[in-house]
Amino acid sequence: MRSMLTDRGSATIFAVIGLALVLFAGSAVAAICGLVVAHRHAQSAADLAAIAGAEAVGTSRDPCAAAGSVAAWNAATVEACEVTAGVVTLTVTVPGPALIGSVIRPRAVARAGR
Image 1: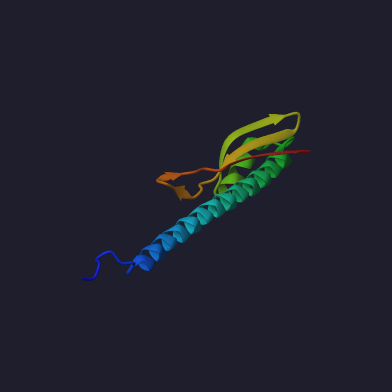
Image 2: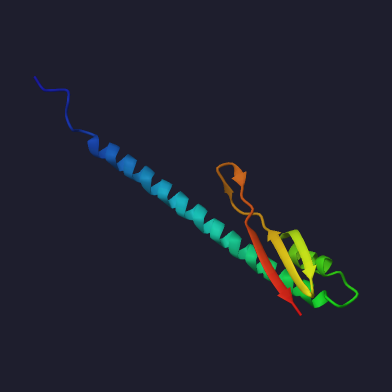
């Protein structure tokens, strides 16, 4: 009689487990890359908006409004704007990737002055 307990098909199980691990690792790397790209986008938008706000200091325009319009052009939202002694400090957020059912909004801070 032949034994029913053989090693037939065990390579398939290991291959499926290995494939699942590779897919999980790839998804994790893609999520991290998406977060990095979104943060770089937030920092660029914050820098540009802070420069626009600094250019408006000393003119008839509101520095925070000027910064807000440039941030909006760059798909960013101004969270905080402070003008102190000709220096504009901004905090902006941008929509990031959706991870595990929630959207992460990367935040960046920038300062510029005349």
